[in-house]
Image 1 (cartoon, rainbow, N blue to C red):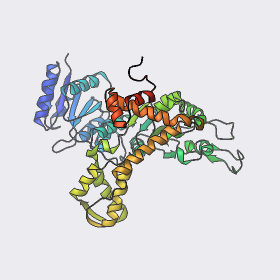
Image 2 (cartoon, rainbow, N blue to C red):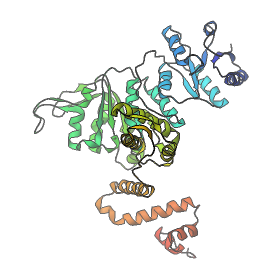
Image 3 (cartoon, rainbow, N blue to C red):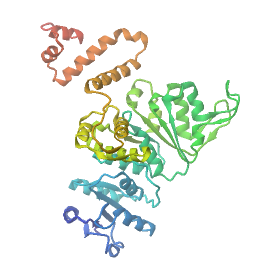
Image 4 (cartoon, rainbow, N blue to C red):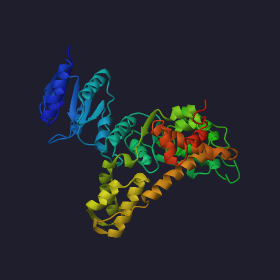
Length: 449
């Protein structure tokens, strides 16, 4: 028997397109411009494909009403908008997928097969979502992953550069989960390494000098909630074994205690470092990496999603008005264009600071300009500084004697890769001869075997 699919969308072009594609694949497709009249289809359809924003109603509200009545037909939501709140709500209601318009015929067909092959995990309750702003395709995917993570207790690893909002995404997952306990945050690098174990697992009285009372660690304080370990890539190797045991068993020993304690916590981790590279260098345990990254969510820097800058600016203006008692009505076109062209090495955090600073100077009316903290030249210097710092952090003092040679060879090889192995071009760019270039990368001079 052919599977029945009900498509609900107030865009008649979309209705026709989806019906044509799926009908050609052998499905029985029914279409409606709104939820009115859908009741007569519910008994014999196997899937609902519904637009999130209909003319006079919310597709999510319609599905939520169905879930409360016990109607658990799988649902695929389609939308032309990237809205964190709606996407997370949709996935919490058990949506098999959320597709962003325009999508390809292969996208809708693949999602349909997935929906019909799986049993949807239905959840009808949700809490107020934590505000995360983004309209780009990249953030659309992030919101979908947040929705998936909110329906289970798997360990989550959030990656991305400093300032992209990894902590906000962690809070968004917690806010949309069924956990009633607290969201507890540990910023690993901000705590001296010899105290990090105490901060995480607590201690008993007399465990060390200064331990004058039993102290609960953050793991215990997060009971029933979420424990968020930020910048996990900076955790010292010797502590990683104890963390691995905790991740696997959700149990630990407070410092100085022989009594094991168990907690019910959801674990979310974040890092701005490349953990896979650290694993290869022997600086991060491979088994720990696999344990903490059961779900991995990457947040791109805002220079790679410029379309998010305008809604972020508008969001920060509203926040500044509310928090600082201002009356900013908007931002000038020239200031917005300046923000969009800027590279934002500090990401969302830097953007927020720039908007707040401009808002305080303006107090009321339109923000005419943004003071950008780092000029292009300085930004390039900052990038180079960060690269060198990362390189040096991987070296011991006795290995630094070869650092200059290694960096020189790495630069030459990268340029050769960029220019298709053209040694003459690379030598010209560097102001050296081809023989000198060959000597630096330890290849024989021209004409010699």
